[in-house]
Length: 449
Image (cartoon, rainbow, N blue to C red; front, side, top):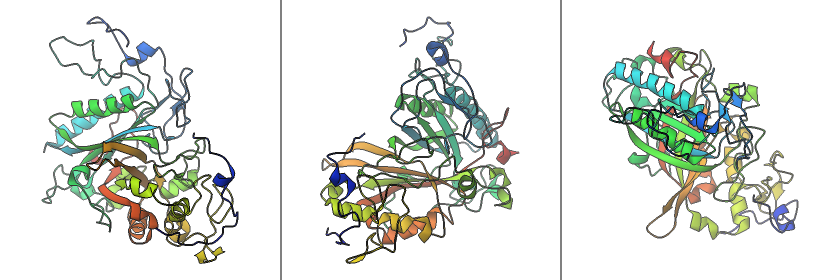
């Protein structure tokens, strides 16, 4: 691949060329009948107000790779909005989509109640139920036990509802809620470049578990799946590491597996007006779905990256594809990471930031001001048959309306973004994320009352 612009840039030498290198950054089993809890074992926990729910600094703990305090830190489960959206993105993810296997509305609601109770406990660092080792010896434990001794680790659990929950593939109103389906909640269109795998797409329900300890995130999904046995079945799931965006001004911009900083201008939790405008569904947005006010829409897309092909491109070509320098993340028009890109600056063979550069194609200035709150993750699922990395970006984004935000931008990307030469979308799903549960409520209660 030849460098497209070929012009000398304003700074002549990229900052990464001027610096030698950028700094990259059991507890013994308790006797049967003994009371054992995760918090009890670690001896702490607390509660306090914060962003999307309350961030609680617990006991002294090491700094996590994401820059948030891991250890006993925890986020309140209940609040006006679900935690795990504007919450500072944790370093680890376990995401799961479920098919609802029952036709009983009562069983579905009972599951949501049970999931709410278990999620609230686990985000406090407690077992999903009474415990893994304190129940009757002739019954399965009501917690799987792999998180015994581990703190809350900033766990957040976020629930969403897919289009199939309202009507199934045959158009049937499964649970008497079809007339309350949000108009924007439909299967995403097929975009050029999509090679979707049904086994990695769609779902009636989703659960996003984020934490600063991968075992805590996996424990959460595993126990919710266990609780849902007979009512739901896991359709697909995805593990992620190394957040690929920042959702708080307190966090530094991370890098994706192409080695570039990702999400420099993501919507941040502290930007309250931007969050209201671009993330939260407002009252009156959809008269048929007022139950969703205070919630959001979650777009999930699995982008496979052609890692080995990318690694053979020149640095100049890589930077032209992105539109930013690899070292500092500054736009090719000059300045620092947060300098506004100058898309009109001329180079010797066209704009210094190529028109098909990723930053140009998706920039709000070129998309009617549309923005998204991204909180995706890197993934590596081993190697493929040729020995290449089966790796990529698990894209997660929260938007107020996917029809005016995600869909037009993705359609534009698929047709005009140079980066798409190295990407292939193999999984896709859209969910409506209800507002937070208040005291005594279960997740999504307003939809069923």
